[in-house]
Length: 151
Image 1 (cartoon, rainbow, N blue to C red):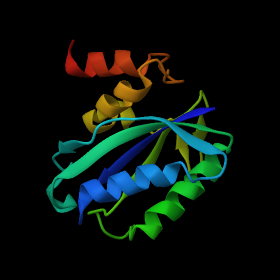
Image 2 (image 1 turned 90 degrees about the vertical axis):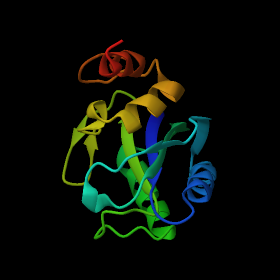
Image 3 (image 1 turned 30 degrees about the horizontal axis):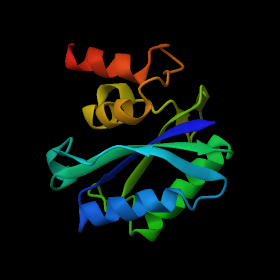
Image 4 (image 1 turned 30 degrees about the vertical axis):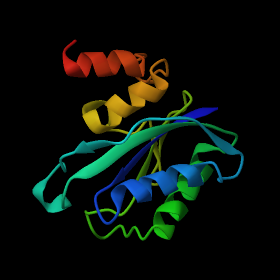
């Protein structure tokens, strides 16, 4: 199945971290990167989040179940020094969409509950996975991005 992963960093060598993390996605079990967006600089969502972020998205093909893919992403974040207690992030990996899967548990909500309100997710996501559909609204990422931009 195809999955959309959002990548972000606002601590340290952001570009190097994101380049390395994107390469590491190809090393996850039964997973390969199909496309990766360019990195875009974005302002933090709130003042306590630290400095500017670099964000992007990767479209992957995976045989992993969504819960297992999320576990692998969390391990990767920890390898890059991510701690969940601080708002600034060396690496932030979010599982946005996983095919047409819908989940709501303590560990995982699919699609990501706020992805459609975040330009730093929608823009890069539409760039690499425009035809993917949000299983709730039925709209493609390209449609959601155009709507967000008011186009």
